[in-house]
Amino acid sequence: MEQVLNFIENVKALQIIDIVVAICLIVLFKVLSPSISYIIIKLFKFNSKSKKSIKESAFYSPLKVFITILGIYIAVLFLDTPLNLSDNVMNFVTKAFQIISVIAFAKALAASFTTKSTLIKKIRKNWKNDVEDSMLDFALKVARGIIYIIALFIVLAILQINLSGLVAGLGIGGIIVTLAAQDTAKNIFGGVVLFIDKPFNVGDWIQTSTYEGAVEDITFRTTRIRSAENYVVNIPNSTIADSAVINWSKLEKRRYKLPLSFPLKITSDKITQISNEIKDMLLNEPQVINEDTTITFSNIEANGLTLLVDIYFSTTVYKEYLKLKDSVNKKIMNIVHNAGVELNYPATSVYIEKQ
Image (cartoon, rainbow, N blue to C red):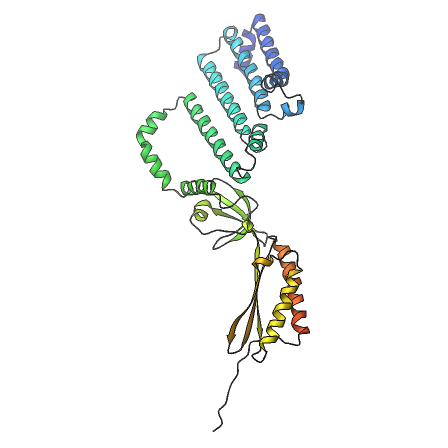
């Protein structure tokens, strides 16, 4: 407290004026930061007439922060000589200004690499359907990660941390080998494999040896899926990359195999009659692919005869598929009932030899 009082007593009238001018500079830069940011972005987006689109730019908010910090930095430089600030104070202020500037620029640049940014929307529109949304999103995450890593190295350089000594001590090869041995590195490499191979996209319904569900997100380390029971599971990318994955969303049609078992006493004419009636019924079903559908007298076994109805539906939506199965099953049951035949049921015949 005494030091503060002594400082106030030693402050001259001219120094008070300088402090007031410095404060005015800070306030001026703060007040003008939105307008200056708007003008700078407008210079690069001269075709845009919408103020909303300019203010929604990824660089708008970081520019406002930078201009405000620039005002503070200029004010401190202005007070350097009048207040005779120490070299340590000026060095701290300069480094703080540089670090905040790097962080603001990195944040703005990273925000430009999102699916919501105007730049990426334009690129996505030009690419049309050549790149899937999930793969593009993963690539953008990689780009943002690289931006932040570069920003981190720049900040470390500003703080004068000896990176060359660290790299020389560990060795580039040693770092790569160490990372490759880590589970995290494996998952990142697995994510790259998924990005290149494109076995599935966000929104697809997939099945692995352990889990089944809808893909919600693909990150650096994991793929998140939501199961039919509505729980969420995060699967390491390395596990998925090394596993067989069934992508049910890539179905072009759905198959339904229905074996009908009849008693041995049924005649071949009756089987032919039932087969023809089922075929005629399926011809009138709009979502049945008739050229891929077959009805065959497939088996003669000890406990009965089998008529195999092999149907392909054009729909790939699971709920619609269930409704079609329900409808077809009921119609087949009516055909069998009207033919005066009962379906066979599992049974075992026991013959006792009379002595």
